Image (tube, rainbow, N blue to C red):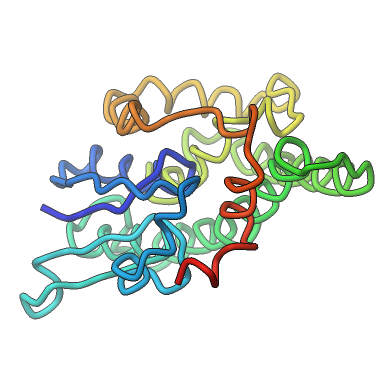
Length: 232
């Protein structure tokens, strides 16, 4: 059983989705990012970039424990270890990997900034809101075009779908009207009713809270980096 250092965010859900789909046992270890748990020395020893998710696999390569951070690296490791959701065929494998990297380099960072400036920023900055909302719409167009005539992002259900799906979940908060992207709407609706995906999104439900409403300055400073060195 792996220890999954987790908070209910899109990046955290990527890993619960894989584990539920592949039948990999996991133990949720909450990392309360609003309270500053990500700066605790014991967590930094596992995830030096003070971000979750991270895992500790007691049965890593060579039978030795392995600590791993970065959600894309975790998905790739688990897919390779368990032989699930990453094709063996080289061309299909590379197709999955390029879309996984697209999520890591585009969807995640850009939609994360979209969330920040639309919801969490202490003051509204119209330029920033427009900049990241426009980029979100561009990325949605890329994905919608890719899903035209496809059930999944690649030829089969894969870690690429698992990586992208949780970032589409909060589309309303991103200023997105999903009906404008019919291929994404169809793909999203099909994935959200998969039993494993539903169970994965329910993971850690008791941990959830709406941190944007009434966010204290202390919580804001922890979440957005001002306090990180004080917490080390």
